[in-house]
Amino acid sequence: MSSKGPKQAVFASLAEIAQALGHEHRLELLEHLGQGERSVEDLAARAGLTFANTSRHLQILRRARLVEPRREGKRMLYSLAGGDEVVRLLHALGRVGERNMAEIERVMASYFRARDEMEPVSREELLARLRDGLVTVLDVRPEDEFALGHVPGALNVPLSALERRLAELPRDREIVAYCRGPYCVLSFEAVAALRARGFRVRRLVDGYPEWKASGLPIEGAEVAPVH
Image 1: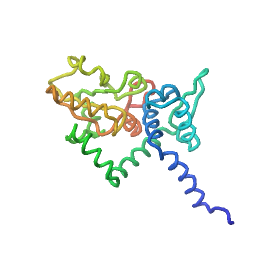
Image 2: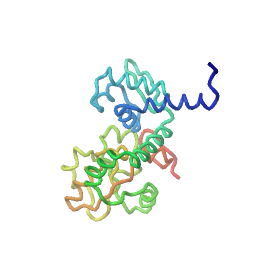
Image 3: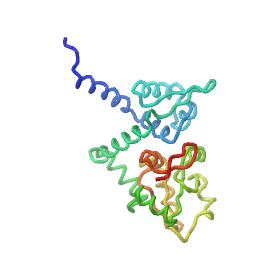
Image 4: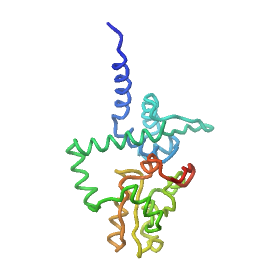
């Protein structure tokens, strides 16, 4: 049997990456890692998986060079390997899925668009409005994720605390809410709840990982230059 040619060798490696992406739990783990570095224990809790199952999925992602580990004492921490490229890969996967998969379209219509039919705010529009001081940015992720990095000037009100912190939100200017990514339900739920209470609120088109991957300025543990 002849050895693989260069094209076949590249395709074989790409197939390994595709296989690593081929599980819903691994995609969710990558979404969580898009917020910042996490321990195996923390990832297991957030994804609702056992420690052993989470470790197994992370090893598959590691073999495909999608995540990288770092030991801290007795804990193993994971982060995205080449984080921005992985975020863009997941974004492209989502766009293809929305175009080609009837089940995704059904979920988008029955859940996501049912809660927010308005056109979302693009990253470029939000950046311009931030510079002009025309908008309040609302980060509805948990506090520990916010601390790892966020859109400049964002107000962190986790969805679980939204009801009791309504007084902190302005009623005389538009609010733009965001969370973990385009399929994160937190911002959709926040937008629906705030509109029901009379706030002017829209949703960012995706989330913090995509904002960061675009090279836009961030605040938090990893500070990017302001463009």
